[in-house]
Length: 160
Image 1 (cartoon, rainbow, N blue to C red):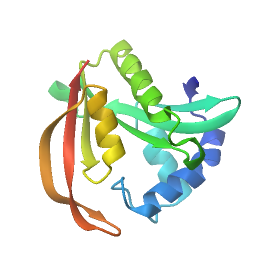
Image 2 (tube, rainbow, N blue to C red):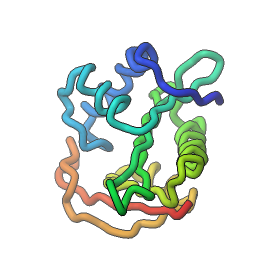
Image 3 (cartoon, one colour):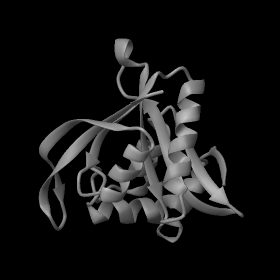
Image 4 (tube, rainbow, N blue to C red):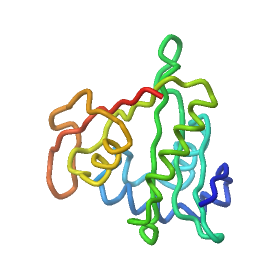
């Protein structure tokens, strides 16, 4: 798998995946009806860095990396990951997380925190735990799941 910084044309190609994931309302607390320019700003302009994961010219997924807080808390980063439906189950999320940790360390971050992992996203929770992240907090009913109603979210953390 190859990682490189995402371009605006990459995002246009990635947009259907992004749009589907936010409209499913199962994993991301993003406005499900946001348009492509709003999504681009959120995913590519606001973060510190945004990457694509590709193989043989096929886009498999993307992630962003940003500081989780400002000032005295800017040594902890935050990431978000999305995998295309065609690439699910192929280790893309694991590869992106491992790559993001390497980038985070190279940028001087000392830890990574996921602020809102939806508890019903069992695959993600299990993967993050396998990669050394701990659930350090549970926020009861913090996510309004499209089919399950109000479900808990986890704050997950790992020192780098």
